[in-house]
Image 1: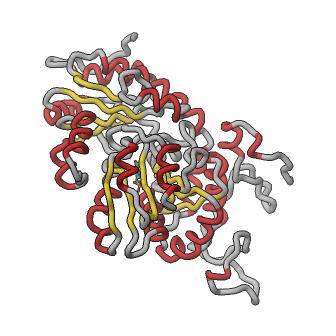
Image 2 (image 1 turned 180 degrees about the horizontal axis):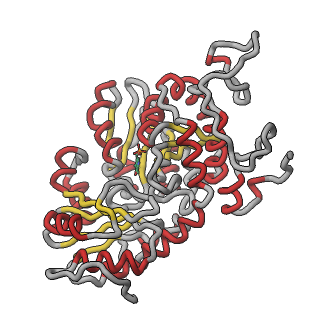
Amino acid sequence: MERDFNIHSLGDRTKAIHAGEKPDSATRASAPNIVMSTTFIADADSGFSVENMEENDGWLYSRWGNPTVRQLEEKLAVLEDAETAIAFASGMGAITALLFHTLRSGDHVVVSDVAYAALSEMTNEMIPNLDIAVTKVDTSDLEAVRQAVGSNTRLVYIETPCNPLLRITDIEAVAEIAHRVGAQLAVDSTFASPAATRPLRLGADFVIHSLTKYLCGHGDALGGAILGKKADLLPLRKKTAIRLGGVLSPFNAWLIMRGLATFPIRMRVHEENALLVARFLEQHPMVKRVFYPGLPSHPQHDLARKQMRNFSGMITFQTENGREMARQLAGRLQIVHYAVSLGHHRSLIFYLPSEDLLKTTFQFAGKKQLESWKRFAGDGIFRLSVGLEDAEDIIADLRQGLEKENAPLFTHRRVL
Ligand SMILES: *Cc1c(COP(=O)(O)O)cnc(C)c1O
């Protein structure tokens, strides 16, 4: 059955289900088959050099390309409005390939001073050790970004909303600043997801996703992706991704594709639940401060409204005696799992003490950056990934978890 519709003209829910998928011509299977084969029967005169690899060559070896992984890449590209995508074994696999591909010794890279921990740690020492200069800036401060870029800046790397503070960066404005000095802009859009923001439309050159989070959505497969223009990504695949080797397993590609089919529907409920939970937390006596881009109290709510079509499901909040409260919540919560990661159907919460993060992960150049951190995080924050359970059950669980003493056990549903 040949399909003759243009997938790009269809709605997001239809795209999420149908993009990248074709009924299998041999079996007529409706759901995608998983092709686990690592090698493929080749023509006797097919080439062996990756340098000669063309976009639509047949399959040769699964590190170069695999039919199931390619189906996922096509689905992701359609959902993100990208020309093409490359999938990796994890979000960090994608980030490593991007940095190794775009940067050479003598180059300069500007990185968001608060971003995913492993990326922050990698750019503290590993990247400078390759004779690549790194400047960390608060990328929500456009003047700071303007001052940080120079003629040898190759890449500006931002995260919006950033992990874990939910601080927001104006993608369009930073793209302009980067391009003016001939640098490219990479946006880690894991927290926003394509339901909220399409950074490529706003001028970004690369979009990064940890597929492990909202795109898979079920907490059972690690994965990552880089999306962008073919002119950038075909060389990235050929020269870097295939050689570094951090490629995605076809089985994980299949699981992530399965999750992606319901992605637009899930994001609606993540947002709806998160707004209710954020409002509940905002009026709770044990909670000092709540950050959620969808609340008018978020310091960048206007920018969030301009740049995000969906406010996603991530909330941060502060309480008195964070460490003690973390112990209390870890012991008491019944529905919300006390665990790292985010974007799953299950609600997850974790306490991030400022002292630990400022010691091992985030290095600030000046007082202004530290003040910005303190404004959002204080002594520490709870990062709450609001899942797809009923909002009233999540709220009832948090209520009994936060209760001062003699908390009633979580035994019945309460009406909001
Ligand atoms: C989780 C995460 C990553 C890393 O992804 P992995 O799949 O765990 O390697 C990168 N960026 C952000 C914003 C993340 O939340």
